Amino acid sequence: MPGILPILGANARQAVDSLARARLRTALGLVGIMIGISSVIAMVSLGEIAKEQARRQFEALGTDVLLVRTLTTMAGSQAISLADAIGLAEAVPAVAEAAPRILGHGEFRHAGRKVGQGRVQGVTAAFASINRMSLQAGRFVSLLDADRHFCVVGAAVADAMRQGGARRIVGETLEVGDILFTVVGVLDPRPENYALPVQVEADQSVFVPIGAAGRVADNPAIELAVARSSAGVDYRAAVADIRSWFRGRSPDLQLDIITAKELIAQMEAQMQTFALLLGSVGSISLVVGGIGIMNIMLVSVAERRREIAIRRALGARRRDIQSQFLIESVILTLAGGLLGILLGLAATWAICRFTGWEFLISGMSVASGLGTAAAAGLFFGFQPARQAARLDPIAGLQAE
Image (cartoon, rainbow, N blue to C red; front, side, top):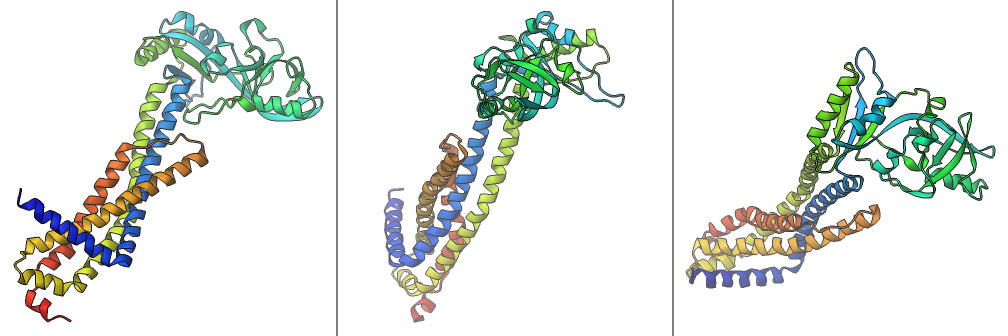
């Protein structure tokens, strides 16, 4: 080992001198490997950031959320009864709160002007707390409203009413379909979580008491119930208790119960596959850059045949020549890799700024970038180094 280190150091200095003498060739090699590494870094980092972004969306809603939906069979689909949906939280200890929903669509008018068109959602008071909806003004619907014509409007609907001349939203009259409702609350803007299989679309919606939803919905059946499990209860136990509750009330009812934790696990598996796919796509440009490095090293070997022959004549062994060119290739790819990491992180930061995602530096992507650069240098530099080591000294000395 003490004798090898000086030789490696001398070869490294010789490699740096050789690269410095061929500046244009070195620059072209750096650009090729830099683009390849930056593509891999950007693709892998964006995959990790997208996975983290989706996880945060789930965590913002809560990992204890359960979605209870009816399944459509050959005989049609049964609806969840209102009494069963409302009584779920009281009857099942594993469920802290539950909120059924009746979904309809309609046109919204205020003072004779159209102010929107979207979902009309018949809900209970628990729907707002489970879905983390906050109020800008007024209150949300409650069980005390029964089937009275009260409603809560989303932020986009409220903005349209203001543009139409409404001075204050709470207390105004809103025509939903052909029925007049009194606005009792306005919701804060709420970004939609598209990672969930069911969207609320709160900003463009009007929420009415579930008892009044039958007057504005084409199908007044409960197609969904959103529940939140009790603290400390495993989601699998909560699912089993919910199925047992509904089986005892409606034996023929077919349910699909989706938990947030199951969705997170599925999402992470999908995003991992997506990240691998992105990394594979970025590796194509890395292969192209590596082939460029190989071509550059082959040209370097052809141009330095006389130098190689003189070194062999002075006593250099084949492995000394081979290690020199391998070190030169690795130095070139590592320098390009470092520049590629900086370029890839800059590209990732720019994309995050454009999309509004939070920028994160993935340590795995940086480490993989450096490792890939070193591996590319060894892989694509082996053949030129082997060719240099096998060069006939006599033929090299006779070369012009």
